[in-house]
Image (cartoon, rainbow, N blue to C red; front, side):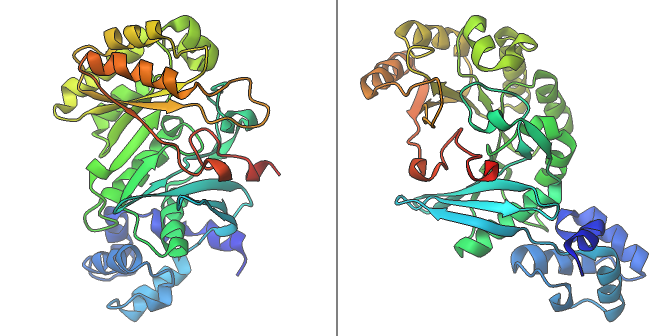
Length: 349
């Protein structure tokens, strides 16, 4: 059977518990078999319909006729000295995305792509140079996790939607993906171990609150003035810093104990001054947040430079003095272009 015909069926790994109960009804079998399917696929990583145990023959036949168990092809794999692993996954239509597995103590974090490319156009990000090709489906995002665990031979403990794409530009598929991965009967990730990062899609942040997204929120701020943010993150012209911070405050107020992650990519001579640090303190005053400082990860042809370590430390010291939690994130996988803002190298070839 060709990949195209297989993909024309509904991908099983893109179905949640309710979907599978409906499928069982359509097949004329008891809904309890939805639990058996989920356990087999997501707990034992079974990718063969014929091998799903404890379900009747009639359901096996129905699944074979109506659903598919596609797996993306891994067309490239790189392993960095620090244990970071980057996979280039080929989807059934031939489009490729990158996903990254990052080791950290007892944790294995997987960075998930939500789109093929990205339309936001952040000027410091390599992914943005290719533009947007298409959105990924929920099943394709789940397939990233399945492939990552199969190829690495390890269980992923944390998920960050920080790969290729703006997750909130692909809102409905991302919502479905989050419901699948946090379903206790499915992949059973704790919502506290799932983080969605946005460049600042203000209306979608409010919509996340209404829909009660089961994840943490990270906001890629990266500037303290609209003049600078307009240059490096063009959507700031539509959703300026004041509106973005209003949405963040509403999110924190609504979610109560939930701490928002503020991501700040440091660009030498652009947003790394002591004055920037002081303005950042003012913007974040009273907010329940953690600041991740990310010194820029250079790539060939970029107009930006990475600040020196003394500049990073001085910037961080201002935040700490203001009683903010500010952490310099050590980029992993830089030598294989797997660090923040570097995903796309292989798919452009």
